[in-house]
Length: 326
Ligand code: FUB
View: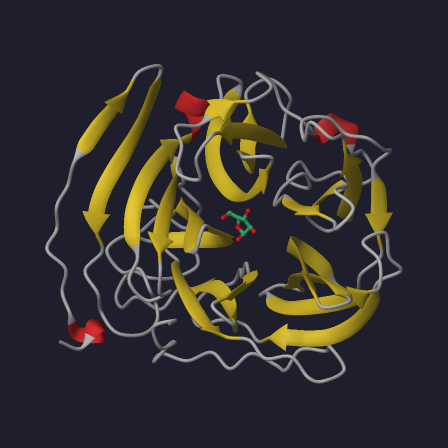
């Protein structure tokens, strides 16, 4: 049977986890070929890691009803795959149930593994300090259960006062360098950067700024070969641009546009991973017919190719998507 035309049987099992009202879900996503890769729910702001030969995909769940023109995101969803085409929903994590101090808004988030623990850096709205904030959940597994690691936010809007907007502390991306040092980047209109302590839970430097042309939001750090890459959402509606460096501390050299505005969505948000020898660009668009759009987005995956000098070829977004990774 062709894997792309295979429609998986749906088995739904809800498991109550003591101490958390998160749901561990075993549910096979019905497979429709190509992009978007997930069609039964609206999914946005992808982040992905590879752990023990499996890809774990972390997304925000766009829950805005059809006529609402703003984000409504009460939870994040976690999917896994061993071929990048067949995705299984593994967990749904409610923002307010996980973080007592959060008012809601499961905006962009990213997971990183260190010493057998998984740290999930998330964007939420803060209950008491006006604006968006960054918190951290921790787990022994890439799918949870997740526990608030600090009991409070790591970054709040009052820590970054150079812009008057209240949503500049969003979209964390975390990177652990070859020497073990951990680094956090985040921001909207300003790209912020700070080192993290060994425990991943405290800042280990002043908050610094990185000067990037037309930086809007959605930074993503990755390394390939000798180069560090900082990709980000550029202007608005958002394209994706990127910069390169020979060190995680910069200087960052702007390299241009990596991806054009993605269909029917004014935001974009990318994750870049290598898996089974191929490189992937994971993003969202608003292409699901009828109600899809900027507030009902859908995760897509296309190939990413490097040039011999380390620069990246412009992404070609497709509706066919990718072939199963082998
Ligand atoms: O999903 C809410 C926000 O929209 C994210 O935090 C941004 O990156 C943009 O995609």
